[in-house]
Length: 82
Image (cartoon, rainbow, N blue to C red; front, side, top):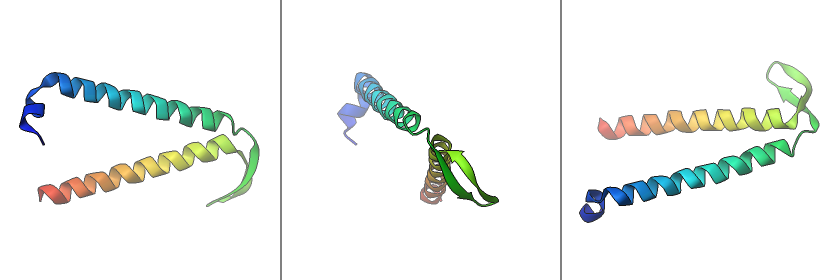
């Protein structure tokens, strides 16, 4: 990391704003994608098969993926500090 850049708090603020904007745009696209997929689909869940709104399948898949990503990131961070 560039020491001059690390000392400049305005560059951190600008970087944070860009990250927040990117997250908001991606979040909005995700919500739009899910909202446009309201059709009923047959899903084979672990406990059985039944019709479910596609938006629910998208949300559950996203949450499982995000949860797995967080767990792996924490595990990797723990390995780096050990």
